[in-house]
Image 1 (tube, rainbow, N blue to C red):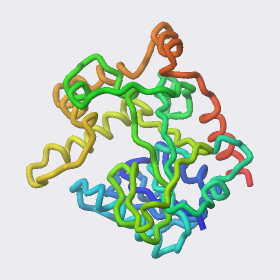
Image 2: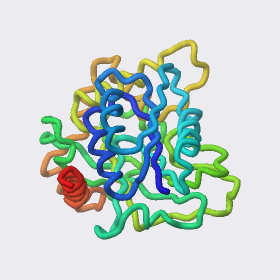
Image 3: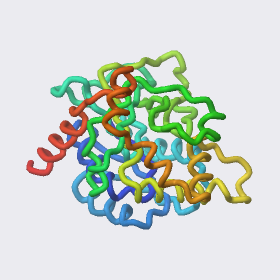
Image 4: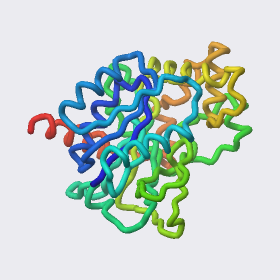
Length: 292
């Protein structure tokens, strides 16, 4: 069995599309931890659980224990469904096969304990402001390496052009450790691992200014808490927390929206490419699943 594990909070704008897509692509069951959503996400999960197998875990504490919780939800997935493989996913990530005719279940039916898949950002566009996150064909195909110092201190960089970690799909039996972003895992069969090029993880991190601000506000609340001694969180979120508090977050958002001339340069040097397939394929699969 192929299952998927998620940790979600306030993902109403994208979660239903995500779950319907992956279910249609061969994911047979889902284990989802909801961290106190207030936008209708939790209610949506109840509704979708009538259509597909979803094991829901409620985690109401706001202590940002992502490293602990992500392993916890994989363990809950193992106990609920006993799958052979678990995709460790987020609501804004879509696992796309390179070949339209292949299912995720078939591609991930392998002997290795840990399968690593590369991930690519999709850039926001003004057309996404109406709530349709699929209104983009701008894929960051060759990202830029920004140092931690640059990410925190430099004003004029576009963070969505930076390198991002891959994702893992793993055998939950023998899992020892899973890092906070699902980028790496440690397993009893530590030698049994591979990188799979037949699948790409397509990431839609910024889908509108309202969604971006809400996401940053949630992380800022945790970052500024005095009762949490150690918070493992990316430098980009520390940057955005500072900008939110300085009233400059919309300025940062506009750093993600490129003019035609800027895009021409980014395409010319190979950082960004026009790729309409991800959005079109996701829309096609979801539409077909809803008709069937």
